Length: 301
Image 1 (cartoon, one colour):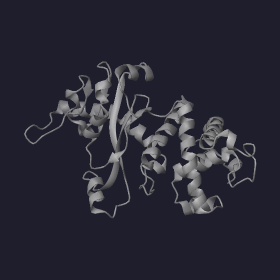
Image 2: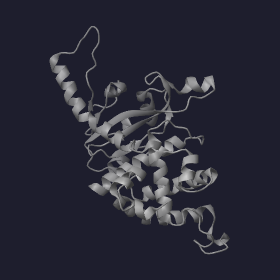
Image 3: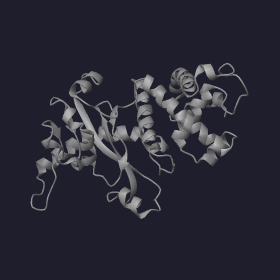
Image 4: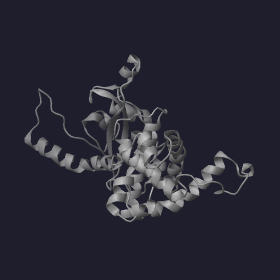
């Protein structure tokens, strides 16, 4: 991998890593320190027989090469055969590098304070972590997975909405398109509202914060007094012109959540058909994709 050449071209760097060269270089020092920390966690310092960094150099000799490698995997989401070919390695070594570097990237994004929360346990915690919050946008997103051979597993993962086997998560964002909370990824069979209820998130949102959702979260208005949701038409009660105009206004504001999810899904590892075999790795992909999107917003603000 010619990392130096890659970081000279803004367009190429975005296409390969999903980040601009300045963003990659900004994250690189944090990633390097997290790489050292992770190595000592896996193998304590007293067990090292030589200095850190000693020995034969591999296909990814520097921490910057490793960062570009793992970002390239998340952005392009190639098979391990293609990934190995592009780095002149065996596919087993490419797979091993991905498994080793994903926790390092998560640790680095956590240090930069851009990883979304997985759970909110109290109103005080929400106010402390997100001061000045006025609006929350909640929306569900799901991605297809390879069709399981087991009939029982197919039924568990089948989404009637997508007419396919999927995995689903709820994304909570603010008015600046920053992703604040990503709920744990579950089977696509579960309803968006049911998935949200499992996290008890709504009861920990203060009344002065407005919640913007779509009609997939019917019932949330009974849990939170400050909920903005489009009016749903029925056969007996069609929408009036005033209600249609109100729905269009709400949709124009609520599109912020779609932009946040779209920013997260710039990385193909969070958008394409999931094909990895490690359990819950798709949840890690979603978390890292949200963190990289927040990091992008942090760098451009």
